[in-house]
Length: 133
Image (cartoon, rainbow, N blue to C red):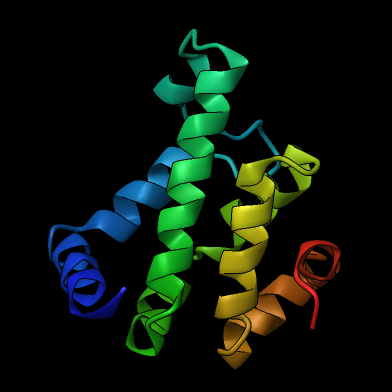
């Protein structure tokens, strides 16, 4: 990744990218799995399963990149990034999106408050399913 990766992350943060990415996740999840409580246009969108998986896979991969930066963990905590990622990880059942979500969660687990949130949502189990300690 190097400097280009860091510059991309900072640019994404500067334009509100983390909140937007989490909004996409929340809108695509079924109700009750960290989904957006109100009407969710992306959930209603008529896309094929592969397209949906591609969107979720790329968003969760991006969240994993953001979670690599320790300085961003408080921002991600404030956005409650854990809940929709746990939802994707459980819903995906082994898909690339669920694996990417588990990796992002493992990186976020470095922050004690986020680790506690994962425990509340039973997200620790999903991390161990995909990420070997």
